Picture 1 (spheres, helix red, strand yellow):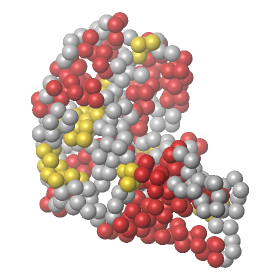
Picture 2 (picture 1 turned 180 degrees about the vertical axis):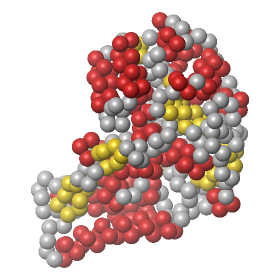
Picture 3 (picture 1 turned 30 degrees about the horizontal axis):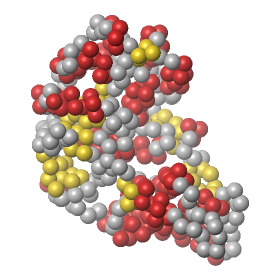
Picture 4 (picture 1 turned 60 degrees about the vertical axis):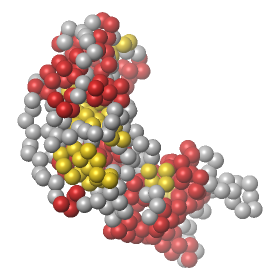
Length: 387
């Protein structure tokens, strides 16, 4: 079993239930929203063209910080002007969504991203023009607002659907309710989208590490085989690419409870990408990497070398198509993968193999092979890890 650092005891303050948002956080968010509005009003009063500067969320404005080991957003921005015919609607939508978020913060209420769409949607008086035609318009505006204000969506009191669960020896307080995550039934603890310290506090934790798996079907095997009990760990899943709530919770448990994070994902470009998002952050949310990424996370499988290493059958093979190969080349070109010889060997091996493998395919050996033999062997042999 890998050595892990000692965990600090949870402080009394960390265990104190706080079902309402911390006022200082709400005040900070209110101040950012008010500053945005004041700047627009000040320009209008001076009869100048009101604008909002939005940082560009694209690979061209992202860099990899070698020191912190996560993706960071650059300083390139795009100005959104009111008196620009091509930008006027987007400018007004940005200010409109900001006003709805301000209302939520003022009233200490939360809304889903879908509810924000309906709160902001209306027909402009005297016209047939709607503020939003569909949610595909409002969601990017909300993301623009987050990065412009340097605030998490959750700090703007916006939540997304719950996706992802965990089980293991940790007791936490969720909105004032104390929950033992070893006693949450067969579904485990459903991770909410808002997991900030004023909502969720860690009370007790006996776990030595976190095993994060890709899918709920894999998680269920670990749950039924009580892997978390035998190995004294937390087992989590994100239903594919983990949501912001899951990533934020992994970040918090790693940093606050000093729990190592081990990722068990499919042997394909998507599995590699999911690991990259957990470890370095995502390009689209580069501005929040410092609060979501876990640079110390390691990939323990499934590896392209495991086919021979574990004498797997041809029945586990899934065809690798041209799109997969293209995606592999893109991943290798990412600055956070480039130059890492173990990862270069891994991805080149996948392409040479000509096939990919799912974690579920390990049950071809036996139903509990993944929990009883594969992962225990991986945890013992650090040479099989990818960092």
